[in-house]
Image (cartoon, rainbow, N blue to C red; front, side, top):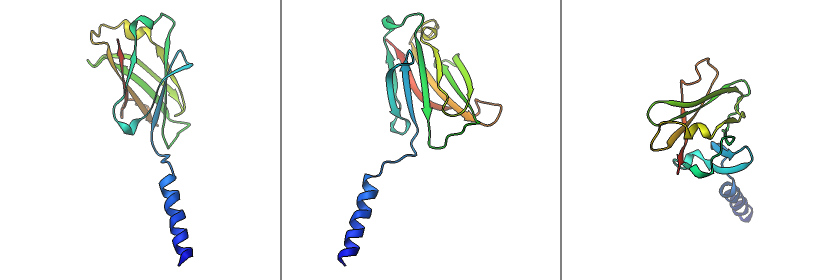
Length: 142
């Protein structure tokens, strides 16, 4: 009886202490080196805030998205829109571990008076990269 109780306690302890590895997560970098956001998509909508005064012409924002089912041959795409249906940036690459980089200045140069943008990700094996968009996060310029 003690052995069964001991085994049950060990099993329960392993179940409780095991972390889920099936969550999708996203990293956002400023100028490819400074991490400005790191979040799990399952935990609600996230907003990355960037100060307008800190943006220079050469600055870039890099987005890395990861999930539990990587695909080395898939077409991965990043889309940024201005909440009015206007695409600010689109880029497609091969492989689910591809990082997507865009100019921070491109966000400043838009006619979006609210300075709020939505970032979407798509992964597909088809030639239509925008069939299924996954919302990643908001960008807000202050």
